[in-house]
Image 1 (cartoon, rainbow, N blue to C red):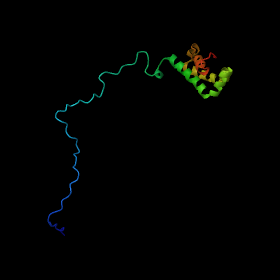
Image 2: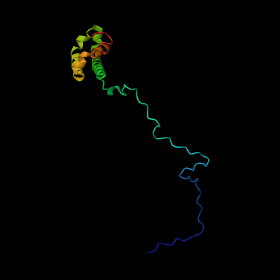
Image 3: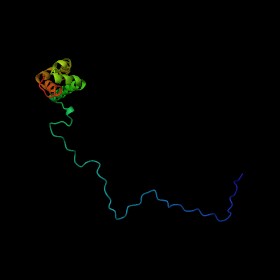
Length: 141
């Protein structure tokens, strides 16, 4: 069956005009505009190098003495952080050596195991850390 025929019955009503339609693409630049080159993706010169002899990150250092000092300070800092009340009492009473005897022995064993007995016994890094950190700068150890 054929679709019904559409009849033209006269003039159609006018559709009111809406707001003007804007184009989706941006307008072309004016002829007098000077084109600007995009910034370079890489810097022209290489970045400056760090000073010779000093690593960028001290924790990446291969110097055994620096590693030993850092380990001694870390081990003794742990004692001060884990036992603040005992440390305070030992500083007040002058009994730090007795109160921390067991923990200091364990830390010393860990220290000598990691840095080697020769380096541990030939330097004062461990005692320096004990006096500076645990004893608060006093010469106790």
